[in-house]
Length: 196
Image (cartoon, rainbow, N blue to C red):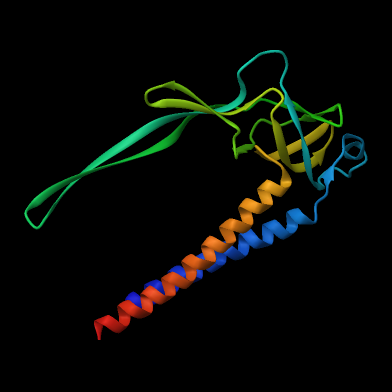
């Protein structure tokens, strides 16, 4: 049973690593567009654009995710001793993701939708003990991944960094998933061997 579980985990890790590697190869083949070339791109074509955010006048975060810190406390008894452990995570409480302009080569290019992912944010702003915002301010450099559309870009993801940084992060994940796959298989084999 432990061998099967270890092999199953290894297969899942390998599948996730394959997907990340496949996506990284796809993105490598997509050139980062200039403002002039976006207008000539066929609608629906996958594109990547790098530039600075401009949402209009104003300071502070202009595109952001509001998060609350949620903690869970568990109490367990082991060998007659009580142990208490607290785990905390940040959960999304709201979002402000408007349509905006990304300034590419000094020219604005419109991101027309409001339902994009915000990843690799440049800034975190604490708004209290257990709340924060993460996102981008005017002028922050972002990589827009999406498709060409009438009037601009339909963004799938807004990443706080360059394409090189994005791809480097994906390649690191591929390596980590590969290592996790090998370790899962080895641990499964060792656990099965130890049961005999």
